[in-house]
Image 1 (spheres, one colour):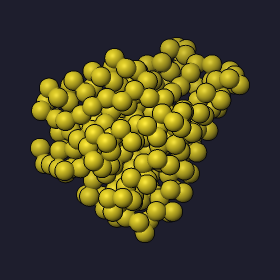
Image 2 (cartoon, helix red, strand yellow; image 1 turned 90 degrees about the vertical axis):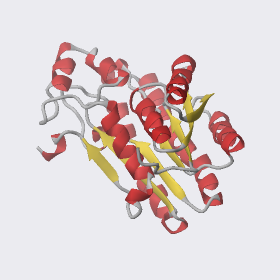
Image 3 (cartoon, helix red, strand yellow; image 1 turned 60 degrees about the vertical axis):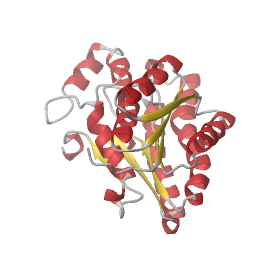
Image 4 (tube, helix red, strand yellow; image 1 turned 45 degrees about the vertical axis):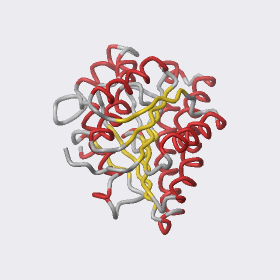
Length: 253
């Protein structure tokens, strides 16, 4: 496999499973040293074990992206371990069935993880990228960053992903002349634990997910990882402030 990231260091939050795990594995296969972070210690460590089993280099840092001290420590530990930071996938995010009930505590928690978490990651990652002369960051948004759903109302999740796109554009413009690119991926329905959780909301939710994309199937996490890795690589050197939709054609309808 072509070594797009030889000599470079990548950080992935939400790396315990799904898109985060697939992306961490792909970063390593393409030559990066990878810092993997998640609040799920066992599964995060499992991601590192998988990377090493394929000959890659990685280590695990447990952390909660809503905690500024923890995020700062995550970035510092990455730099202490590998000497630099070149790219990041800010992927940690949550859903909760109570979101459909407009529950206030659920709303606050989802916004804290999905939006504040991305903001804190950007805040502490960007200074390290500046030290090495630039780099690339990808934030995980969603097609819910463009649309809402009547059949599965998720006010907090939808609001958070709209905001992640706005945050991405803001950071991209602020640092466009500093050789730092900031983009977002906007997955459609992808076979992750989060999607499985949404499918359990109701029979209607499950049917909606299963028949969502015009391509007639649910995406695999590896398909999202390919997009995220491309945006972090020099292959996308003139792309910044972009929200890349990967949805099997749904938004085209």
